[in-house]
Length: 391
Image (tube, rainbow, N blue to C red):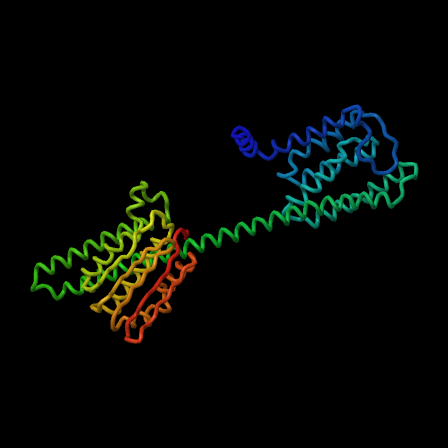
């Protein structure tokens, strides 16, 4: 099987003229076989005559011209048509006459410009050929026979045109699929950029603002600045990971490096601790045991917590926030609630990328997502994320 695939790939790498050479050679050899000589295409009622020197010219024009049937379809069609006319007018009636429909199919399929002009010229050229064959013959061929052969040639051109339209439709479909894939990838990267940049930068801004008021407490100031530095390093690491997604040649990433850069639900504790250092009181609880295989569910769960904590920092800084994660056999449930002015987050992000992006992520995995204000003014984000899904 491997050798056959290798041979097929080698064949496809050859120039198109070399790949078309065997077809023309086959017709040329078949034309000289004793059993097929004189039993080819016949238009009119001229008697069949033996091959002579002009027969070689006619056969060469009809058969060898197929070599350029895809590279120069008009040249091929013109040469084959001349060879066919000589074949019929001399009465050779060779098997090579069947190359005319093949040339028409190729021209109809591969010709890109002046298609209508080509059809008109061929139709006009057929008229004097039919008249000449009718006069040279014994009168046994009726006009119906010439019209029937013309219709056969028309069908051959139509078959080529049908192949061309099918090929164009397939190319358009592939381009449409490629455009959809590119758009989906851009959307995915935009979501990642939003999640990474918004969270880290928000944490750094909050920490930096807090540091302005800690000049009288050197120890707390040092901790705040250290938190800013650590957050910046994590932001750089995640951004490098996104650059690797955009350009695989950007960095030489090993599997271990990719694993450590990829956010997972197991890193929520680090995320919570970072938020605490930014001055946000966060209660964190986990229930159950994370399953061995989660597909993309763990990444989506991480992003839900990340976005909710970012909103809490931005719009309810200082309000108590709770993060609850429950691991089930078939799903991960995430709930993040913020007391008091957390409702401002709903107003600020309801029309932006944040919550809308989370909803899209969860919907892709056939999960449930909700975000809204409670009667007491709190704001809660909930997500049920089925395991095993892939983004």
